[in-house]
Image 1 (cartoon, rainbow, N blue to C red):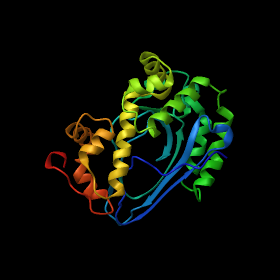
Image 2 (tube, one colour):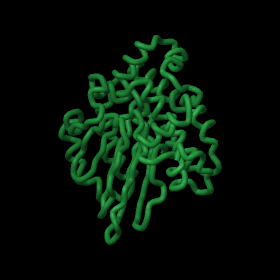
Image 3 (cartoon, rainbow, N blue to C red):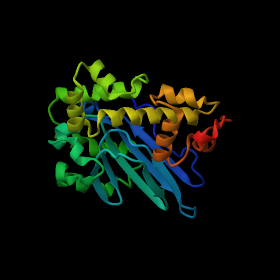
Image 4 (cartoon, one colour):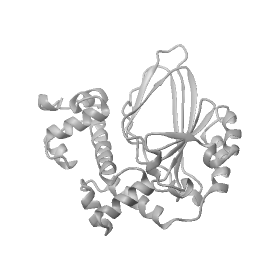
Length: 278
């Protein structure tokens, strides 16, 4: 089995109210590591409790999701993903590796942006036969045991360009000094146009969008960690020209100004900063 997944990033509501919630993730078999980042499962039981809103800032990845009696493939979602949780439900997902879905799809991943398609279009009727059993599985491992053999049977040959795309997305996620697509192209040894073509084909989002999304993930993580925040310094560290541009992007994607988000999500006192950013 490949390396265990790290902590989730991009989750905007970390303080859920009453009710029962479960969130689990599991690494794939080693043979699937070039294509699958991890499996995940979210379960909740809110019977007798008020509905609750959960929101995320999605990653530049494709997901196979089984829920409500259906399996669908979801492309990269550009905006904030919102879901009202109510009743009792189980959602199982396969998060494909960045770049790893292109060999399975057989066409540019950008054609799936902000849309979905039935999973049987790519995995045949076999995926639909697994759907009814997923909610009754005892845990994520049992779900994976049902779905993974199908993925192993349908896994494509290795694709060097998929591996290259995954490497560059990982660099965009972890190299916090990268704030522009031109910088990523230079480190990759590619022209900007070639980098943009690679991302459109294999990632499903532009290099600029990918870098910006990961910088906002970093901002969310820092604000959720709590403590005092120097807003101007944070904006510059994330590649913004000034605090106002950072605050605008942050509000547009999270629905809250940075200061308001920090007060809601941070575990400790957070300096609210100047009024224009909160």
